[in-house]
Image (cartoon, rainbow, N blue to C red; front, side, top):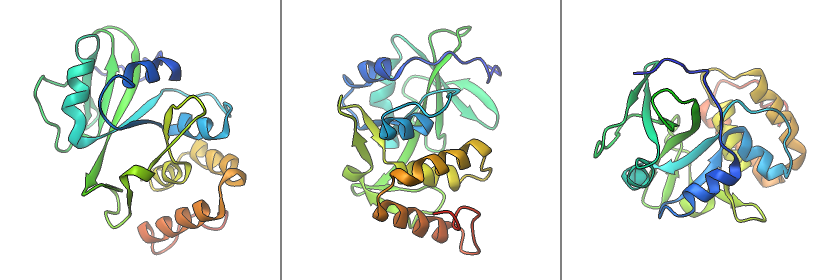
Length: 200
């Protein structure tokens, strides 16, 4: 078990792309880096780098990564090694490192799907066609659509100041239909209101 949650030395987006592009799964950059890929520039410093994969494809990812990396399950404030062949039904976050004493290099986030649809875990009625959840950069690097990434940020139990800053930065770059979708989904998750709705 590890507890050094602040011990990060993230690898680059280029390294992530090289690593994941040879794994036969759906994947994409997530988090703040996904928003920056959409912008085409870095808007702020990032503490880590996140990759989204489908829960159903987790063992394929594990089998390709575990030869060179150590993978840890993040559960209940603890980081515990992910064992070979172990299918994670409820764990959502995986932290990845080169060794038991090396800094964390990247994080994998598992997302739910059903019949070719992505499902938003916090409000399962919110869905998108699986083929539509990622966009690609000019270099063909997949990343989570900005309106979906902003939903993850705004829909979190604890919305951070940097999440609101990300919203403010991204709003001028969202298409009307992206803004409408974000507003609709936040209203569905928070029927009594959300602090972001006045800005979108």
